[in-house]
Each structure stands twice: as structure tokens, then as C-alpha cells.
Length: 467
Image 1 (cartoon, rainbow, N blue to C red):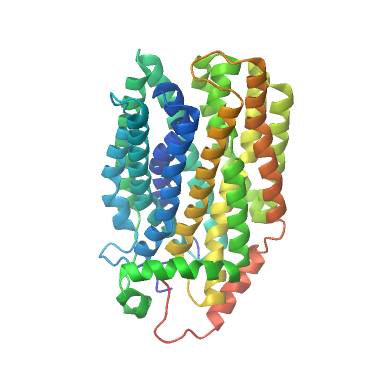
Image 2 (image 1 turned 90 degrees about the vertical axis):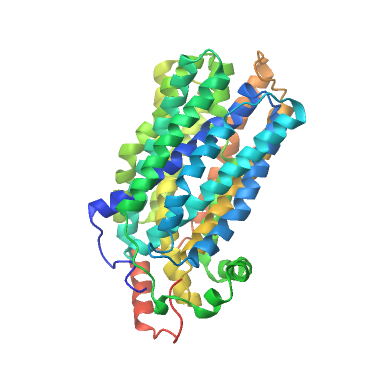
């Protein structure tokens, strides 16, 4: 490190200045996650099978570009630093692509699927350009593991706020417009404008020290970006072999992402089982609203125990809520709200702990392999997440097709039962698997302190440094 990160606490303006960027990013990400698949099937009119294909292709492409963007960001040199320029210059194109994704063109059949796929790919690419440098910036702000937990908690608070805004805004636009196609388009425009303003503010609110010669790895920088990208992609698999904590995080992330059906299926459950579309206005924002006070509480619990223990407890609570939802199928407002609140309390732990644990694996990598590679590690973390989302979309499309789902039509009792099972039992199995994987995660506060001490005590090879 060359002064880009502090060893201790950050000021609150610096913390909030960075973390609020996830508010803008989540206008896009939550827009895709909560409404994207439903928009394709019930608004744009694409069959579940082809909606899954379109969603999956964009997610696979997103997965490929994430590590590439990480390698490019690691090698970026500018008077604003490595990562901040991407946040600034990618903000407006993201807003344009988001509006295009939620515009329904006068097309049909294969051409409509092609349009959905192309605009989704465009948005995912531009979101990668902004999101990977934004995430990597956290590892350069501070080397303190506890402080990173604070950043992760703040990030999740802003991410939850983004989910809350999206979940509240889109149903309001749907209620205002007679045509759902127009409602989604204008909602996307409004959210895109808001996201652009927030990301520009993040650029100005953060500071990244300009890299000097000692902070470069000359062979990798001078070898060119393309050669460096290829080298990083190959090298990352060696990193996974040597970086056990990172490997465990990746496996848990992929398993959880593939099995995470509840969020996508919630809209279908509201529409076809609950049969109260107006209830979207309070049901969809509820989990995000609960997440806001939970983030600091989970961060406090992790400080008292460990990040792994917090992950485990949260998963246990979430799995109990999934079982309750499946067996109770709650249609009464009070019971439904209670089950969703409990699930949101438990489910909030996983993202907070993941983004708090991932920067700690950077120091583990530095000790074991001699390089930090913040953006590359964050890029591959996003890669794993997007691969899981792609597989999830393919699986969901296949499952909905097999159980006989037909958009905008009444569903039979057997179809509704099968949809409830997809919604609850698939994520239940994935959550149990993720808990088993994370049982051996080793890095707690004491372990991380030993990592930093070992790095500080080791003479650094001449000509090398952080990247």
C-alpha cells in the first residue's frame, strides 16, 4: 500500500461518500432483480422459457466482463486515481441503457427476444464499468477489518435504500399509467436520473490518492491491458487454489445465487396466488425497509463474535422464514408481514457479511501470493455472482415452463403449489448448502490482525507493490 488506504477509522463523510454509491447502483440492480424477469413475461409478453434465456445470456455476459473490468481498473492510471473515473464517466450511459431495457418496442417473436437480450446486455456491461471499480475502491480506503465491516454495513444500508426506492417507485408508476409498458419505461427514466446524480456525488465525495511508480507492477502495467487481462484471468484460478477463504466465499456465493428464487417469484405469488396486485406497494418495499436497521445490528454482532457466525445466524433465521412461508402460505396481511419481516432480518446478514469478508481475503492473498489485486478479486466475485444469477434464470424459466405457468392467465391449483415450492424449497436447499460451506471460513478479527502483522514484517520484493 502506498497511502491509498488508511490503517484506522475513516471519517463519516468519507464512509457515506463511498457507500452512497451503492444507492445509485441498486436503482439499476434492484430494478433488474425485482422486476426484470416479471417485466419480460407479464409486460413485454415473452414466454418464461425465452425470458430465462434472455436474462441468462445477459448474466453470463455480465459474468465474463466483470473480471475483465477488474483487470482494466487495476491498470487504470489517472489524476483521479484508478477507480473513480469509471464511476463518473459510466453514470450517464447506465441511465440511458436502463431506460432502453424497460422500453417495449413494436416487435414480436424472435425480434422482441433479441431486443430484450441486447438491451439487457448493454445495461449489464455499463453497470459493470461502474460497479466493479466502485466495489474495489473499498479495499483501498482502509486496511482495518472492523472499519471494512462498517463500510459493508453502510453499503448494505444504501443498497437496501435503493431496493426500497425501486420497490416503491415502480408500483406507483404502474398505478399512475393505464398501460404497464409506459409505466415501466417512465419509472426507469426517473430511477436512471436519480442514479446518475448519486454516482456523480460519490465521485466528488471520495478521494483516491494518485498512484506513484512504487505502486505499479511494471511488467503487468507495461505489458498492456489486453495481455494483463488474459494473465489475470488465468492467474485467478491459481489464486483460488491458494486462497482458501476466498474459495469458500465464492462457493457459498454461487450456491446461494443459483438457488435464490424467492425474490423473483414474489411478484408471481402476489399476482397469481395472493391475487392482490395492489399489495405490491407495501409488500415489495417491506424487506428493504427491514434491512435498514438490521445492517448496523449485524455489524455489531459480527464484531462481538465473527463475520462467519453472523452469516450462520442470519441464514438460520432466513431458512426458518422460508419454511414458515411454504407451510403457511400466508394470505392474511398480518401473518404475511410477520413472515416477510423475519425472513428479511435473517436474509440481510448474508450480503453484509459477504462484502465485509471479501476485502479481508485481499490481505490473505497479499500474504500468500505477494499481490493484492483488489479490483481483480472484486471482479471475479461479481463474476461468480453473475454466473449464479444466469444459471438461476435458466433454471427458473425451465421450472415455470414445466409446472405449466402461463402469463396473464389464471393458474391451476397444482401450478400454484409448484410455484410455491420453487419460491421456498429451492432457496432452502441452497441456504443449507451455503451454511455448510462457510463452516470452515477462518478469518475473524484476530486472524486478520495476524495477517496484517505478517505482511508488515515481511520485506517487500523490490519493484513490486499493490495493484
